[in-house]
Image (cartoon, rainbow, N blue to C red; front, side):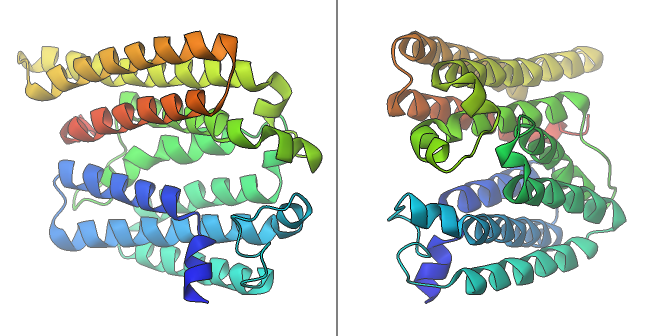
Length: 282
């Protein structure tokens, strides 16, 4: 039962996003107690998003025979997973409240955005909006969790939103046929696999450029050239190189290799953002 429940949580994204919160919180200088609350709140929130997704999509997953889904295989009920999603959401909000009103508000908006995707927006042309909103708010979770809470700088917010856009357009690449069979018509499905891959790489490049530019501008105002700025520049170069490789392949055939290249470029952007996280609120 517990194993099936965990596999229904979308464990990969849940662990990745929670780890990112740990990296950003550490880079932002949070003390241990605040860092633990940040990671705990984000982890609980991600569990709620993953579980609600599988509970809501249970009938669809059964129709297309998704053998990777515990509900579709009959290992656990949709009602049980849905109940777990509700409990995780309440826990996420309770932990968020301990970090202050600003953090609670930002996290509540991010979670509401993610749930709106699961409930409705994934089937519309506005399917990308929840990803841009939730990921755009993510850097601010690290800065709002501090003893002196503040919203993240515009460049960090832009980088987060760009990452969210890229994740959305790349995440659907392996499932376009299954989604089409069950009537899911989000924005990536409307523009097609090739265009989705191109948009994903373009968004990642824009996000990496935002981090590099933000770090450079901040260093210029302080009259310094830091390791963080160098890392930001190298990150931009890495994303551009991976993106160029992926675009060449996407123009030929937007397959799973393109999806993996998008994920690799996204990882570089995440590391770039985390390693310059000390300047998130600069």
